[in-house]
Length: 330
Ligand code: AMP
Ligand code: TRP
Image (tube, rainbow, N blue to C red; front, side):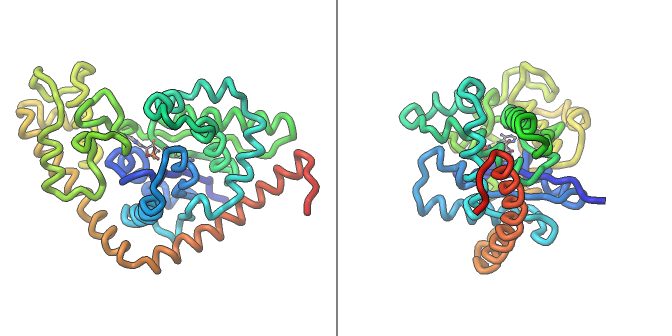
């Protein structure tokens, strides 16, 4: 029986965070045996914010190294860089003609980002979901594992795909979103009602995957909590709730089990325990990451082989799309 297909990606727009790990990559690793997986470093998407060229180059390579360091096996998965497969950009043009201004205007990420980067509300920021839809549809993906902030983008992908299928006959598989039960939205350590995001200017709000242990300890010690002083699951305690989610994912326990274990402890003790859990999970990832970054030839081998394989699948779908809309084959 053919395996079902997964597609997902992360933008190389900064250093990867604990949110990217828990919300995305850690789940990808769990899915790699059961599915035929395409995991992409989406550099075209990263261009919707200004990137310093040399930083973008480094961050792209680092993201690829993180994928491998987290345990994605290049023999089992197709690991590649989005700009290496031109079909993504080509498909995006065609699909942008079938996506409406009104539906793109409703995207909350567009609204958020355009208020944060009011000096650079570029056309790409607006059409971003169309490119994301093509990423997914070109591989006929069944499942898209992402954090909850991306749910709306997967929904618009389904709408665009259905529109194409209805207009030109069955062409695309309609993908489903896959959101983890715990950890779908890791919050900022400083403003726990906001998502932990690579682009936050306050470094204390973010745990980076490559933060050394002392830094991780310090950031958790400073994490904003509340004056209630009890480790419990309550919407009035977003900071503590976030720490419970993080601990729960790192120690493979349910949030309720975590509360049971720490309900009689103070926040200081709990924060230290969370920091230790994160440090333990990240240590092997960091060791392997540094090894990989010292072996650029290997990284290159992986992303070149990935692009070749991705290209074959993506071209096949793109050819079908072109034929169906009436383009003359060369
Ligand atoms: P991005 O960093 O925006 O490219 O996001 C890459 C992936 O990480 C997507 O699947 C996001 O949903 C996920 N992600 C990013 N930040 C978080 C977060 N704070 N909590 C959970 N998942 C996240
Ligand atoms: N938009 C996603 C994010 O910022 C990244 C992304 C691009 C993606 N293309 C994708 C995720 C396709 C899943 C599938 O997180």
